[in-house]
Image (spheres, rainbow, N blue to C red):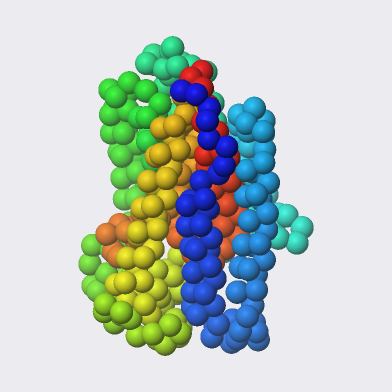
Length: 368
């Protein structure tokens, strides 16, 4: 494959900017009343989200300009940084506790969620690993043990927070990239069975986790406790109909739906903009997936191809998991809706992923 393209994928860039602008509008709509009550400023969340979006765009533009050889050497610095951040969640001086879990690290004037960094670091590491071990990727000792061991270490650190959902997301990323990277299917099948058994054990040995993970099967059975959030989400989606009740006119955000501006912002979109609004989000996510596949297939260098696939996967997988949770098709995982949910860590990492994709879209690499 020859290198012929010179410009970035502007369709992908426009899609990301549209999603971000749409997200700012919906965060303002979903958070204004809560911000006014608890912070005395209706613009508290939207102001912070706009700052994160501005910083994210700067990071995206910077990532686009990074020379390709430098981009290919970022795996170990990212991996080291992610491991340090995950370890810091167990250090009381910097760990931020919320709801009985330590999933944030306080770094001066801001806090960061290590899981978001770990997801990006894992993609960079696996892309590098499979590109260097392509001749031995089918072997157990070389092609299977190192990536599963590294992911396992991250998952253990996440479970110590505890963040069971985050560990599951990393495991999904690992399996999908290993499948594309060429790991022998038999090894993946056996490890999937083992991982499933471990997940079931962790769920059934924790009464709280058991109730929460299976509340989605019948949320109305415990509508005032474990099923409350999903029930309110379904009420909002049901009230929206085809076209919604109107932007800003939703009722679920009036302290009925927890995390209305965060993980469940899609429910607010469904209530206020209806089926059409939710469909727009899904179509834009599907378009990102399409452009991601196109960019990946244009590359002959395995590392670049896997890097394009992996960074796009983080965005699309996050969108799919969030949508499944909000619709009651999957247990709650605490996964944000990319570029739409409130929050700095996932927004900044999302822009970095887009920066990598746009960087890779400029000039396809020759076969390595």
